[in-house]
Image 1 (cartoon, rainbow, N blue to C red):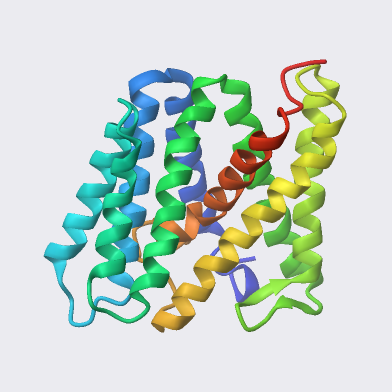
Image 2: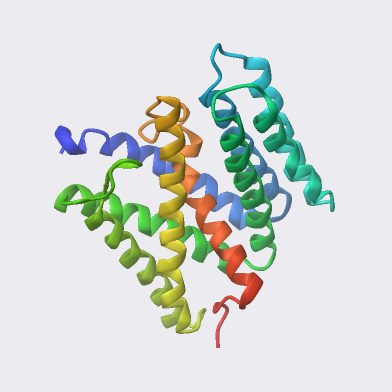
Length: 258
């Protein structure tokens, strides 16, 4: 179990448990604790984005981008939503490889941070569902993908992602939706929406993989042992949150009971 394809499993599990504990505390506490925790996580993601094509290294620029990201997330809670553009604009306007692409992805990160906080303010059950979908999709995809293997889902973007793992991720997401429906916290449509959100999370993962391949790096950083960087761990959350945001522009979420 400690060699070959499972060599990183132990470290991943320990890091995952620590992250789960911190996440549980922030969701249970809610309010300012949740907002600050979210701002810190997404500021670190912005720092990693700034570092991706930072050649030669410019630590000052990375700190500026991270600082702008964290402060603007907090400012947006006071109505200054336009502040969310600050960090992406710095990424897009600083001369570097793929500057505009980094700016666009940075904007997606900032919007998802703001919407993630908005979702929490509408009820903890929404956060439990959303994070549950992302985590279940990731865990099912990781284990089934490595056990079954098979054809690659999108080899040019993410060489390790297989069709078996991708579909298993959809199943895991659907099971989260089903569990909430059976417990009286969701409507039947949630079973269908959950894999769609899970798939959006997988696309978020693929988008970050494309950025890393263009930058010629394997991991966004080494901040999280066994997982790589904060972006590597939370990239799926970016895609999933944006999918929920787009869904809510058209239809209400089928969660919270019939």
